[in-house]
Image (cartoon, rainbow, N blue to C red; front, top):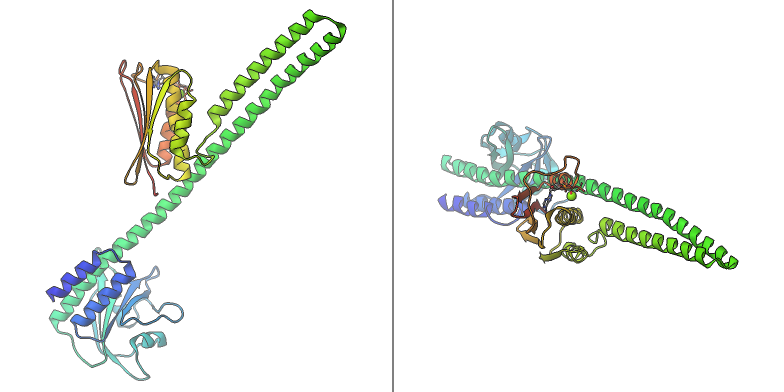
Length: 378
Ligand SMILES: Nc1ncnc2c1ncn2[C@@H]1O[C@H](COP(=O)(O)OP(=O)(O)OP(=O)(O)O)[C@@H](O)[C@H]1O
Ligand SMILES: [Mg+2]
């Protein structure tokens, strides 16, 4: 029986999918006990047992076989958490008789062992059957029980993993929604700015018309005045448009990818050398957009506050963690200067939404590092 336990332990800790593992265990148990076959049931939500695998393999017809809670010897084993033996079992469910290969009136000897869960209850049942009427020795029952408990560990791990994935998916949807809302807001602001500019352009048109009229009157001095006013308005409108668009536009949203987006942003920073060391790897859209915004704010802070000669943006991935940092060699700071500022707070909010960590390392005279670590499913 030690060889059986070792083989089951290997199967339970191996790579295969849950049902493949259960079919494997059903085969090992059948062979070790010299039986004819074994059915592996999983405990469903309502306490019913649902057939998940069998040996020998029986092709499924119709919906999967369900044993109602507590019914039959498999149900009893699950409910009571103890091995249950029956010398001549005749399951009532025709589908159940089918999988066991039973003709009308035929019976089988069955041993059902529950996969017990710490704290009570069972997560699965292994049901061994033999067409030859037989008993199972105490050693065989004990070995079968150990096999079921081992398989149960894997069943529990798979359930926990599935619950974790569901949770992660829900969380991802919430985060994606929040980031999309932020982006929509930024687009709205961009549109507002754009509308504001139409005011400047309207006055510009007014000055040009006035110049046109004055031209007919031959008043060259007045024409020159109006053209100069128009020109400075045009310069103003152009400058405002540029800075508004550079600040609000996200290249990540345009499908450039995060690394390229960071490089483009770094090139556009006025009066500061910004180096980028960014690996190119896929990140979920909302994660990329958030990281881009964080880098953008950190770089803007370097420009506005640090008086630095140089800044470096680094982007890397280690396993399922993405790391972004922005370092400068500027004046550094002790505690943030203005209570009304949004930059650092916004960064912290974004990182929190992504379930990540934000670390700001700064000392007066020794520069600043903003470092973000966020998990990603990709
Ligand atoms: N790289 C940096 N070097 C030096 N000081 C910095 C740096 N980053 C932030 N600070 C300090 O921290 C303060 C808070 O930064 P934060 O980004 O929250 O606000 P802000 O840049 O002043 O305003 P806002 O971002 O709302 O336009 C800054 O005012 C500045 O004193
Ligand atoms: Mg700022």
